[in-house]
Length: 72
Image (cartoon, rainbow, N blue to C red):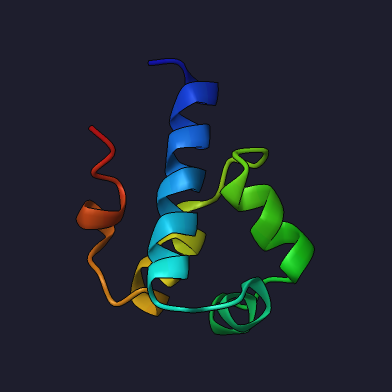
């Protein structure tokens, strides 16, 4: 898997988890201190998030970081 493929899969996973919890991009962005436009970029795989951001994402989704990164 390439880096780009990883980022796209990660973005898809984040979006699925977010929508499963009925969170809008705005509400989710507020939870992780990120603007809606950046949430959109994250979910589309256009950004390479820092580990600290991934930690915030996992915490906001009430899952472990390991679970968030389980993309296989």
